[in-house]
Length: 224
Figure 1 (cartoon, rainbow, N blue to C red):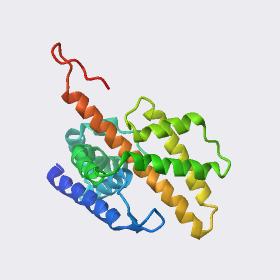
Figure 2 (figure 1 turned 30 degrees about the vertical axis):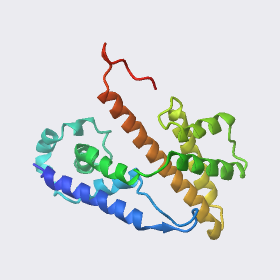
Figure 3 (figure 1 turned 180 degrees about the horizontal axis):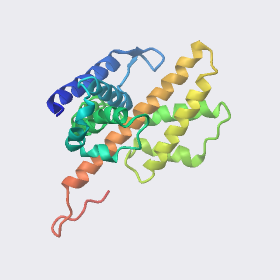
């Protein structure tokens, strides 16, 4: 059996280190000198990599692994051999056991991140992308403008699609820029990823509040 306490320690340590390293980076391209924030996709990847190196895979114990991690059966169809697929999947499935703790670490880093900051970077991205002739609709502007008011608005799903579109276009245009200009494109794309992470945190917090306040006959559901 895999030592889950060891896996937890390794995952939390990797996540903490990624956050510390991101925070220590300074970017002069931004307004003033701004410290980076760790992106959730990077934290998750580093934690899973660390967990994958924290145990020794034994092909003779595949049955034990399926018993310890029932979620292995729900993983996508394997690439390569069955043994190698299970070896890759174990840390991904185990990560879910500690995901809430790691999310708390990540959320703490965004505690002072303002909604309006996300909207400002979205505005910068739209202006930059539009300067290259890419379409920016009025609806997109309206949806992204709502971020500063309510990251959990009914149109937030579409806004996240808009952000993904802007990131994709910024990265595409960055490849064709001179080095002195490329950093600006990459900075805006990175800040949009931070905005996306911030929105996901706000949505999660909003869902948690909904679960805490259960409507009853004496306590109607709050108007939102």
